[in-house]
Length: 132
Image (tube, rainbow, N blue to C red; front, side):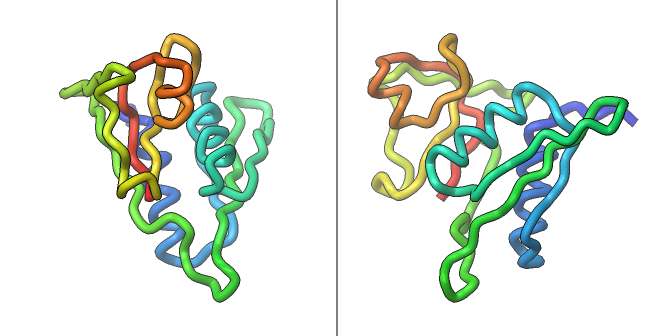
């Protein structure tokens, strides 16, 4: 079975793990997925991650973050740009997610960045997902 949208698969795995209050989740590894999770970590939505080599492709182990009373840090995580309908935004067209409480994750020519970082560097790109 071929996977047509690996980023959507990653987001769904994170969403399902949060719903079940699991501390960590694994997904097949790729450089794009590692960059997306690194952006989530820099923005404070994920505690940590590890790239686990298993001799084949490798897997990405993501350690999820919860509040002091066990509440979810990530309330919504959704895919914006899809393989059938790509969504691109310039730096000045990036809207704030939930009035600045959330982030958009963008794939730019300078790497995968949050919308805050993209605005600061004045670069646009493909909007991969939104998190809040």
